Amino acid sequence: MSFDKRLLDIVACPLCKGKLVLVTKENGSQLVCKFDRLAFDIKDGIPVLLESEATKLSLDEVERFS
Ligand SMILES: [Zn+2]
Image 1: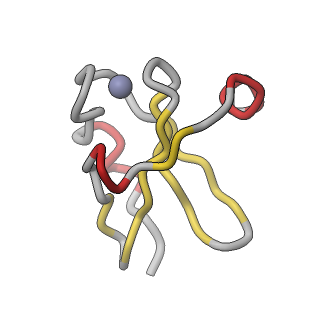
Image 2: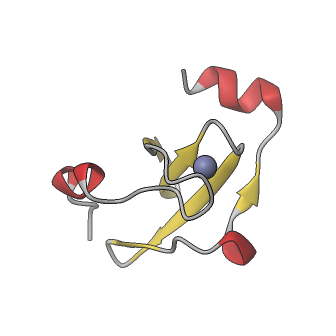
C-alpha cells in the first residue's frame, strides 16, 4: 500500500510539530523531520509518528533530502 501524499498536509513531527518530508526508498517510504533528523516509518500506509520508533539520521542523510 502506498502512502497517500495528501496526508502530508495533515501529519506533523510529534516532537517539533514541524512539516515532514516524504522520502521514497527501494524498501518503502519514510517521513523525515529535517529539524530533529528523524525518519518515521510508514507501515501499511500509516505513518508511525513515535520518537521511540523513529530512525536517527546523520546530517549528510538529511541534506540529501533537502
Ligand atoms: Zn521534528
